[in-house]
Length: 173
Image (cartoon, rainbow, N blue to C red; front, side, top):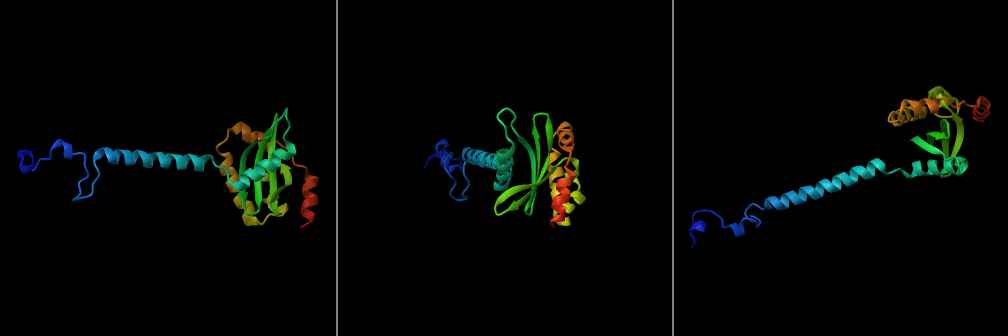
């Protein structure tokens, strides 16, 4: 028996092998596993941050289909969805505003366009939204727009709502 083994020391050739008594992987293998886990965690975070929900894509597609122009593309900056209602903040050229949408038979349709008024729960309730839905929608849109510049939020606020459109819509309910 060699002296190194007898004295309790492992020869260098055995130091990189798994210790079967305790099942511990060697340091290099642990480091590789940590790197792989870190990679998958980072990938998951990136996907969750940048992935849009199907409903967000539907709203974006619906608005762009109606208002996008080759020389003036419509940019959707923020979307909030609660229940069957959505709010979208948009800009096009030097104009901007918000759109209130309702989901009907898997299609998102514009209920009302406006600016600052659409961030008011009373306006949303007058447009047919239940109070709890209106409150949650405004909260979610505030959270979503908080990531944007003050200038963009002022642009969204600046769009003038057509009051007659709101009055016609609210009398249908």
